[in-house]
Amino acid sequence: MRDGEVVVIGGGYAGVRLARRLDAAARVTVVDRKDVFFHRVAALRAGVRPEWSATPFIPYDRLLRNGRVVVGKALRIDTERRQVVLATGEQLPYDVVVIATGADYPEPARFSGATTAEAMKSFASHQRKVATAEHVLVVGGGPSGVELGAEIRLARPDARVTLAHAGSALLNSTGSERAGRRALAWLESHDVEVLLDAFMSPGNDFGTYRDAHGGLVHADLSFWATGTTPNTLWLRLAGLGGWLNAAGHVKVDPTLRVDGRPDVYAVGDVNDATALKITPAAHAQADLAAHNIRAHLRGTPRHRREPRRYRPAERTPIIVPFGQADGLTVLPVPGGDTAVLGGRTAVLAKARTLMTPYMRRQLGYTAA
Image (tube, rainbow, N blue to C red; front, side, top):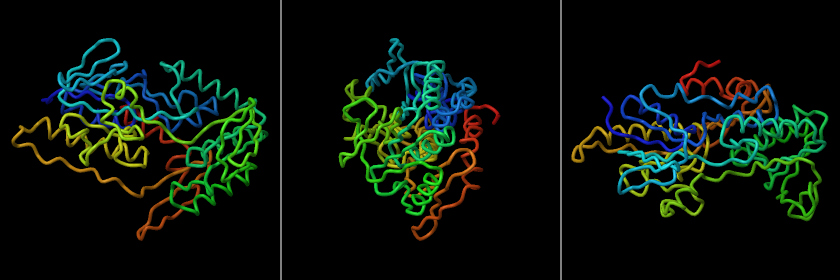
């Protein structure tokens, strides 16, 4: 028996995990603007290597046994009528609605266009530009910037590659100076020019970039790996800006509910529950929200069980691939320190497959 209507807005990492967890317990509808699941973890390599072009796209058709996936754009949440209104005019009633619209990433880790074909065309464009560029500039020295810089270098050993980072050390968000030093050593040993303390902005002339000290970098291709933007503009336009914090993330309480409402949740990159926007955090939130939603739907107002509270992991393993055959893993250890593991661990855990078999299983497919 399935209890109630659950509408999940967003079919990314948190959305598909939660929908699958609730499929047997409720009538689940997933709404997403894309016609497939976009495995963003594989997108950086797909933007460089043609043989990876199709890898990030996994169909939704095996995600749910009982529920359904609607390709469309959510315009607003009508909390009085308890409906999600789509751009087509369709109205989806809900007993619980979940905001899981994620965040927007810079190219090439972005689903460009409205269809898989358009997104693959965007990948092909990036691949051609990388293949012909004389000098490629990557801006950002966090995990994504380092990974992309390594992918470009391995795909184009004959090109000049520069990585510019506003901070004084690479991978500073990991909290490990050793990881930053190791990433720097790998990049420099592969002839990637690394500029630290170099906050970059576009220059006055096409193909020029200026740092904060007035220095100029000339490059015929650039990629920016400097952060993400939560996909919440639609909420603001719908008059629900009060649900958002100053950075645009949806404010949630410790049970991942929005604005104290028992029937509205937000999970994954879109919320303010944690500053660490990584797939394991999205999955952990989806699992906890699924538990709380089941308890809400099955209990009576008087006898509902106390919901579980989300406790963000302050420290979690972070894997940074250097192509398919190398990388590093930052592993928290007791006492507040971190260990940096070598390439073998990174290759087995992520670098070789970019977790594609795992995500295919999450969508109901075999690993292949």
